[in-house]
Each structure stands twice: as C-alpha cells, then as structure tokens.
Length: 159
Image (cartoon, rainbow, N blue to C red; front, side):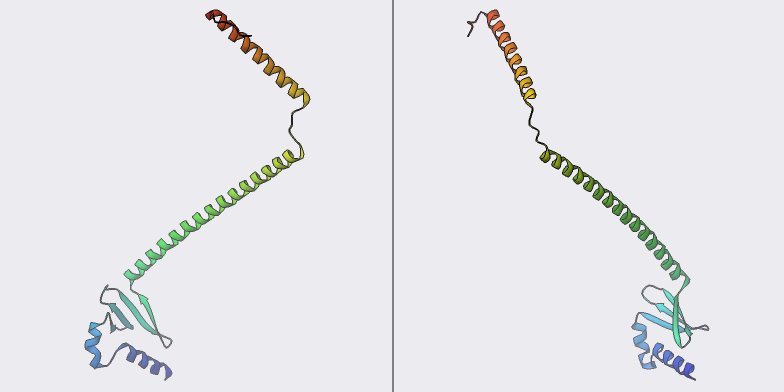
C-alpha cells in the first residue's frame, strides 16, 4: 500500500495536471511513460535518460550513447589526473634533491668558514722573503732590459 502511494506521488510529481501541459512543452525536459519506466528527453541536447521505480524511489540512468560519452569523459579525466600526479611527484623529487644539494652546499660553506676563522692565512716569514726575492730579481732584469734598449737607441742613461 505504501509503495503504491509513493509511486502515485512520484507520478504526480512527474506528470503535472492537464492545465500545465502547454507549460511542459515550453520546458527543457519532456518525460514519457514506457513499458519499463520513464524516459526523460532533454529538448535542447536530445539526450535521453531512462528512469524506473526502484524501492519507492526513482532511479535514472543515462542512455547508452550518453553513458559512453560520460565514460569517455571519465577516462580522459583519469588520464589527466595520472599525468598531474606524475608531474607533482616529479616536482617533489626535484624539490627534495634541490633541498639536499642546498643543505650540502651550506655545510661545506660552514666548514670552510670555520676553517678560515680558526686558522689565519697570513704568510710565513719564509714566504715573504721568497716573494720579495722574486720581485727584486724581476725589477733588476726589467731595469737591465730598459738600459739595453736605451743604449741601442742612443738615449742617455739614467742612474
């Protein structure tokens, strides 16, 4: 009894009174009763949805062509999701590698800074003597070359 009462309410909700028949033609959807339930036709797109009464409720499923289109859209979305997940995983891996490289570089800089602070790099007395000796020999050779050039050109020599 309750089932037939619910089915009656569903039918009343789906089929408006005769006075509203003209309004129903102006609406987007048209519902027709069939042997196995109802068919809802979208007047704008031509898409059909099959509906049937199932345990005091109306269950609607898209027609085969519409279902194929929905499944194709779903497959495309699944592929896009997989591609996006791959991109995210790749970006995360690169970010982790960059962070590890940055941390390693910071450790090396800290180590070099600690070494430079703990040990002054002033030259020893021997290093200073070798550098001055090298400069003295360089200057003597340069002056000798300058003197030789002046003699070849006949220019007066400076002392």
